Image: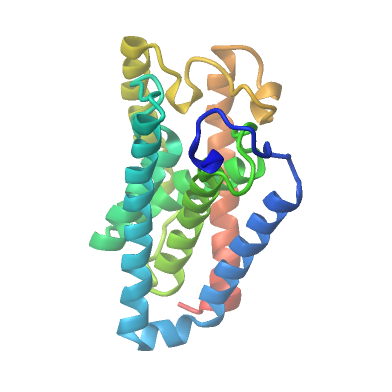
Length: 242
């Protein structure tokens, strides 16, 4: 069962290899399919509800299985095992968004979730785990599903996202980061990469040393949010026709 072991002799992850490219392809096809079949999904409550609850179930199952992975491998540690990464906040936001239909949580999942998920899918921090290791599958499925969940909410359920909500999400993310920073201090963790940069190569390497890269991230986050909103408005105009 090398695919479940923390230390294993199976294949390691290869950046921009065929496995990662297949993840990108599957994600693109999933989002394109949602846009293509949006009218059918809107007319079919059964299909729409099935997708909604399937996404929720996969997220909850994914978190449960990840905790089991940590426990059964004897490595559970509050320094890295708590769901306090940006991607964790994102999938939690997606679950709340799908269940409640909240516009704020939709905006949070869209701006904070989509931007972080796409960045992480391109620059994943899992060099030790190649396909089909559990960590590879869990990592890419959960991150890709954040994007798919947002696409479903915006395209099928037609929850509108305003430009003004961008600043509310940015503020909420900073408040969450301040609280997570305290958790990092208490446990000695590095949630949200607030204490140091990722070990693997990433755009963080160009943002300067700690703590200056945290300030750079503020501006980059706002820029990424604006670009996402511009893409959202373009897709809205071309395909969704609110």
